Image 1 (cartoon, rainbow, N blue to C red):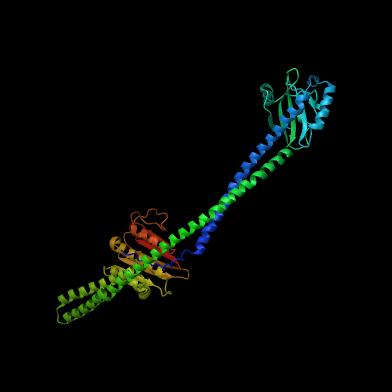
Image 2: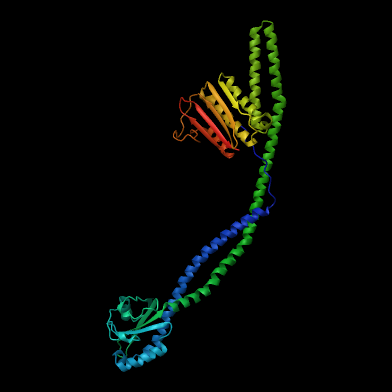
Length: 451
């Protein structure tokens, strides 16, 4: 059956519309910018971790250099034995050539945990347990290890006030071959400075590369957007052409039926009514009844054809009026002995799409009543308010079982394609279809469409 849903003409867009392309390009650039930020943030964190590792490695290498260039050559047996003169000479060397804004503490340990030398002279001769990591470095002979310093440990009680420190330790050897642990404490400020320097080198590469990638993709996105929009414009033009052809064909068929078959059948029904009256006047009542019945069937056929014309070409609703169309639809109920109450208010003319939806709801409801309901009375009421039009069709027939009786609104029974299609048709114009029914209690079908 032809689809009676009215459709407004669709104007094909310009080829290509700059607004649509601009919007697509704006969305792409915005998405690319978000991706750039996310990738940039991730890359920044990765670079930050790499820079921190590089800064710690610099601190480690600084200690290795100090140990090789200054400590190991000056590590005499007297110093290893803790003789005061040797300690004083080594202290002068440390203060002149090792201690700086970056290296703030130096310690020289024996394997048993005794501090042989420290620039904090109060620690000399004290004994503290070495960490397993420090013992492993002494046992394996290296390499140097860098780790955050635990300032809460007793041997670090004089190191507060400088912030977080990084301790680096590695083995050195006394002249008698005994191994000792050389340890420096470096400020995190020095590490942070090196970290910022590395990030400064990484940042232009990361952000610049991502920005260049985004700029390189913009022309590609522009081309794709224009191509997609041209394809969309072509589809819209083809759709408009198909709609125009369909509308033209429907108009031609409707005009042919209205001006030909409908007029002929209407004239024949009037002629048969006249013949029936003549036969009745000559007392041929049996023949008059047959002819009058044929005239009635013809008039019903004419009403059916008029309904079909409205369905084939919905703009006819605007000329004939929704009230007349509903009257034609319900006439077939009256012809079957079903009492019909048609109540259509005198509201202003409804939009064409709303009229079409109301007509289709009534058409399907009447078809169901005739086929399934077994009703004796039907009420069709159309009310128009300021913001909505409401159509209610109620019968006293046998009803049916809803899928969810507790929630009757917008519930169509399974395998009932007609009502499901009506629900979609009403939803297309922003309305809501409600079915209220139960076995033996009749059916109420309500369509409410906002204006």
